[in-house]
Length: 125
Image 1 (tube, helix red, strand yellow):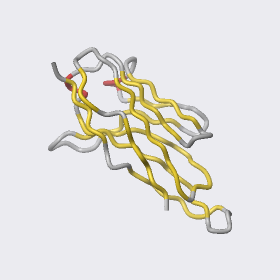
Image 2: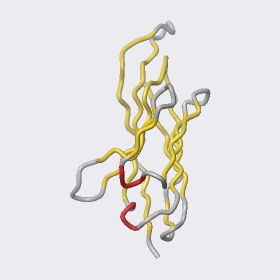
Image 3: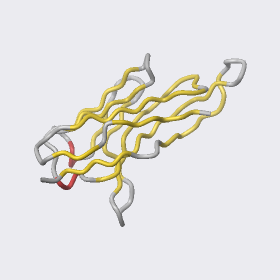
């Protein structure tokens, strides 16, 4: 079992900043890509930012220059720093992690895609 715990959502004024964190725990052998998605009512979930195990990043055009994703491999954590927030950034943000699980003997097991429960970000004055 692999679990994700997200934190950092909340209410912020336009132009403000928030930092979202996501920590993975459980039977983890290795973690590949880590990322953040967001979803608003009536719309499909969309990629916000992702980072590979090697540190390569990918951002949605709408957040480039404002959001930064980084990870701490030692802590199995991914962080999304969001600056210059806009009302259109309001959404539920979900952490997503591609994991290779560990078997009970510690050897590599199967690959899993794990989602967090989501954290609400509201940008409003």
